[in-house]
Amino acid sequence: MTCDWIVDAIFGIGINRDLDNLHQKAIQSINNQSQRSYPLIFHRALWKYRKDFWGKAVSADITTTYVGKKSGLYLDSGPNYAGTIHFSDLNIDECFYSDAQPQIQIVSDKDKSDVLTRRNQASQRAITATSYSLGE
Figure 1 (cartoon, helix red, strand yellow):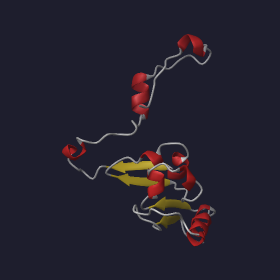
Figure 2: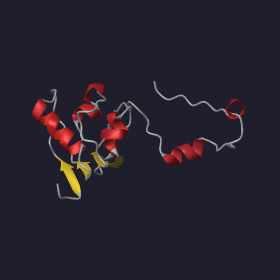
Figure 3: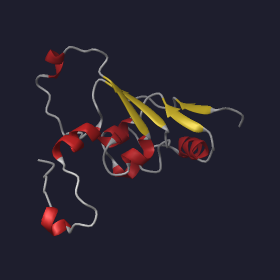
């Protein structure tokens, strides 16, 4: 294949069925190429964090997600499939999110540096340990 990028637009967000062999072969073929890949819409099953879809999605170099950050992009093997994640809220007014019940809190590098203190590499973890609990 002679190209710099493969753009994956095989499925939209509404897919709610298992993939047939033809589509699985197409995805495997894309994943076996050396070109970089960019999915236009990340597979809905991965948004919902379905482990049975790992291996059945295009491994992207860059993923763009809109309106909400989908948990499947950040959990378990999701980051291995998503690559670098770019998010846009499409300038939707905050009032539309007021009743939202977030499933996860995404911690940025800035958040980590604000909360976690750097420790001396030679120090013992038992002495410098700080515990942060994530989840419900």
